[in-house]
Length: 345
Image (cartoon, rainbow, N blue to C red; front, side, top):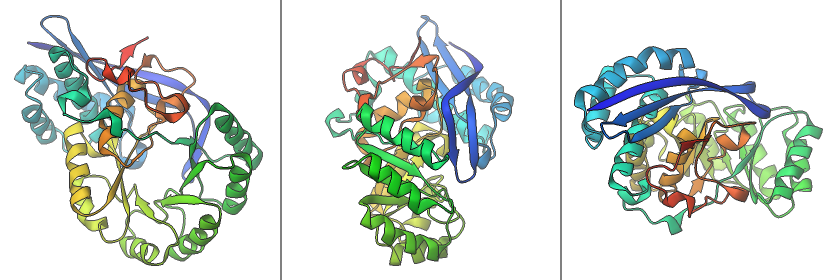
């Protein structure tokens, strides 16, 4: 027997967070809890994105149907059966399904007394460090945020671009953070020719790779950039579910997955293995998420080449704690707690 509940939470960001499509100052997540007959509870969360057609309202609207499936099956270890039925019940709303998936995995691992990565048989020593994101803002504020991140010890910075002042932004970031690894995310803002031209400039500043330089649906433009770029290319908005991997395999170097895009932890693992089979490197990104969601991503990290799991670090106050990431390094000792390690403060 399983009982379920969910709760909508609104969280203020530590600072306004901007990308090429807009700026946000708060994040709404929906936390799911699944409890077994012994009182043990698994927790997960949805961080919906309007860009992918979801809001906190839509998540709340479909969760009763999804949680009915969980209660009807009644076995938290029947994850494959439950996730299959979740997808049959609600075909879209991947963030809502992901919240349930995370809570199920958390509970299943807790019942066995093991951390989630051990349930999957993964090697924590292969865990990469996470990047820390510098969102779009006025140039002086971005310079200050970069200096703060550098002083805090983050050695991988992901810089949002997609403006008429992108070169000045990169110059400022490199000036404030000499020696750090810089990754650039345009969030679909450039034309293919602009992307190729910018890649040559970025290469001179030691940028590691460029994420989603052109609009998601412009596969020919993505191919053009891939063929002519001075830097490796990562797909994010062009890479949503496993079906997208073959579409991007010959036009990017890196597939960037997000749990909130793909619909479940099982689907995320399927995407990782499919990307590997197509010769791609893999990154796991995130939305602005509570630790009730981010912690699960940390357990997937041993399967990754790159991690971008700083969503909870951008919050002013997260009601959940999870797997700490001092200086971007995922805390392997905290990773050893049963389940995902997420718990209410």
